[in-house]
Each structure stands twice: as C-alpha cells, then as structure tokens.
Image (cartoon, rainbow, N blue to C red; front, side, top):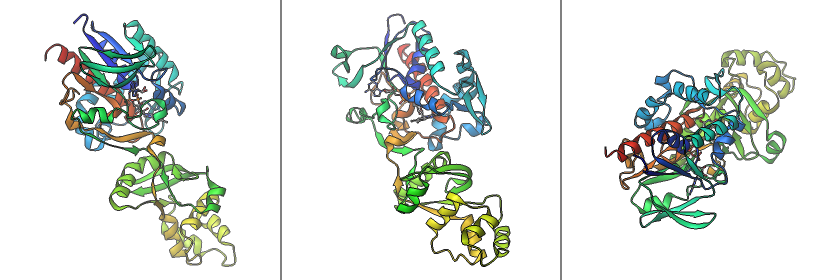
Length: 403
Ligand SMILES: Cc1cc2nc3c(=O)[nH]c(=O)nc-3n(C[C@H](O)[C@H](O)[C@H](O)COP(=O)(O)OP(=O)(O)OC[C@H]3O[C@@H](n4cnc5c(N)ncnc54)[C@H](O)[C@@H]3O)c2cc1C
C-alpha cells in the first residue's frame, strides 16, 4: 500500500479519527481543513465539559440514533462507548461517568485531548494542511483554495468529513451540498437538531425573565415525559430539557405548523395534593402567596403560569392544580440552524455502501455529521462521528486493497 495517497477533507472528529486509523498503515494521509486550526467545534463542545460518550447500557445507547440506528450499528459496534473511553485514556484523558450517565473527561475540556490527538497524528506521519478549503470537484481531482492559490489534489481515495450545518462560523457551513447533489448524491435538507425554539413572550415577561432557568420541571411531548431544566431566553426557550424534545417538536411544527411543549411545574406533587393544598389557602391571600405556599411556585415558574394561562380561574383549586401540572408552551419555530448544537439531514444513508463509500462516486467516502442521522445530546453525536470516521477508514482500506 506504500505511496497510496488518501485525502481527508475536513479536520473535525470524524476526519481526525479516520486519519488516525489510516495512518497506522503505509498510506500517505493528508487532512485538508478550511479553517486556520482543526476541530473547532470539538473545542467548543469542550467549553461545556465535552460530553464525549454515554455510560448507559449499550443496547439502549445503540437505539439513540432514531431511524438511522440500525444502519449505524456496525460502526458503533466496532467503536463502542467503552472504546471511546479507552481511546481518550490512551491519549492521556481520563474520563468519568456523571450522575446522568454522561461521560466527560476529568479535566472537563477538549483542548488537552485534541493536543495529544494531533501529536499522535503527526507522529504517525499524517500531514495536516489548514486554510485549505475544498471548492468542489475538478476534472480528475479535488479543487482547493489554499494560501498559495487554487490547486487540484489527486489521490487514490478521499474521505469527506465536512460536518453538518450548525455553527457554520466554526467551519462546517454545508457549502458542499450542491457539489454532491450535482454528482447525483441525494442530500436531505439540513434542519436544526438539539435546538431552542421561539415563543411569543409578552414584552414584560421577556424583559423580566430572559436568562432565568426553570429547574426540576417535567416537560412532555411526543418524545415522552422528561425531567430536567431549561432556560427562558429573549426569543423563547433553550437548554438541555428542550433539546431532548427538539426533534419531535421540530417534526410536529413541520407537519402541523404548530407544536406544544407541556410543562409540569410541580412534578413532586400530585394534582390531588395540589388541589387540596390550594383549597386550604386563605381566600383573601394574594394569588402569588397562594401559589408559593400551596405549590412552592414563585419567580419564573409562577410568572410562566400567569404568562401562558392568563385566563386561569385563580380561585378554582381543581382547575389551577391541573394547570400547574400541564402548562402548554406554544412554539413558533425552531431557532436558526446556526445556533443549534447539531443538525439533522445530510447525505442519505441509502446513498452509501456499507463501508461508507458513496454509491454515485466510487473512491469517495463520507463520515460524521454530514450524514443523515441525528441523536440527542449526551455524547451520542461525538461517538457516532468517531465511529463512522473509523468505519469509513476501514472502507477505504478495503477499497484500496481491491475488496
Ligand atoms: C456548542 C456545541 C456543543 C457540543 N457539545 C457536544 C458534546 O458535548 N457531545 C457531543 O457528542 N457532541 C457535541 N456537539 C456536537 C459535535 O461537536 C459534532 O457533532 C461533531 O463535532 C461533528 O463532527 P464532524 O467531524 O462530523 O464535523 P465537524 O466537527 O463539524 O468538523 C468538520 C470540519 O470540516 C471542515 N470543513 C467544512 N467544510 C470544509 C471545506 N469546504 N473544506 C475543508 N474543510 C471543511 C470544518 O472547518 C470542520 O473543521 C456540540 C456541538 C456544538 C455546536
């Protein structure tokens, strides 16, 4: 295999992992990265602790990728959450399982892991060319904008690991979509995933409560009933509990033009107990005092009830208890994809062979978030990017070996 040249276009987690695998054999591996440094989104993920994988039972883990779960399964089986942890440890980054089951580096950041990873790649002979932006196909190669001008790269096999469409300023801007579509690859429209939503807050509520967290609430949608927290933003709602519902809320908005996230503001108390406690309150006490004393609601929680259910018959304990257990937040639209943690859409999984080679373009492989799968937050995204990067690398090895 000596001398066979492999171009990896995109230096995020998927591309770097493919380079790591391929550079253990005698290939000449070059990573072409548009930005001045590699893996900017990975570094940003590190700002919130770098949730690198998840510690739940693997059979459950493997179902977290929705309709794509079966298709991703062989890649995940070959690089499981345990493998992710062992790999990180091999790079000097010890991990731990948090109370939610999420796995984080003990250092709670990405930079030491990335530094060690890039050192390993360099040691294995990988060339990393930054400020090299892929511009599409040339007659017999790949056209790049490089610091020295435009150039055409010719290689024996190439991997595109260009990411999805969220946070484009970190590099993954989905500019490649028309180039692949023109070559007969079906690329599904990118949509926000793990995103916030716009809500038509009143000016008074927005001014007073934007930035306030709602802790220990249960939110329900077609995705189920989940406990957690989220934040009221100027535009609407944001945060982990919202992201957990985001795919189903987004799909419902697309289908019906409307969608609700329903909140239980007092998950520790039954409606019956709330009714009893509300009925016991002094009828002359203010509404705020009754809510606080009987239901433990004050601040943003009490304000949310008033904001969203202004017509609530405040004196009727049964009605009020039911309202506290099911406050509907009407959603207008998802926040723009540029703000989302990740994206849904991308290259259809039916467009690739088992080993991640595009059916329409032999010799060209794809991996990571640019493929059409989505998953909640929780370390699933990075695990699948790493796993598909490895699977595509194995595919390239097989292709170059003539298999
Ligand atoms: C704020 C935030 C927090 C996150 N936190 C987590 C988390 O804790 N856990 C988790 O699992 N996931 C998290 N994610 C998601 C995770 O970071 C991504 O799913 C993952 O980085 C995708 O990897 P990738 O290699 O497919 O693409 P990317 O990381 O997007 O990398 C693609 C690379 O390709 C380059 N590129 C694009 N176009 C071109 C071109 N034309 N020419 C050359 N290079 C190009 C880009 O510059 C980029 O470096 C987070 C995302 C965000 C935005």
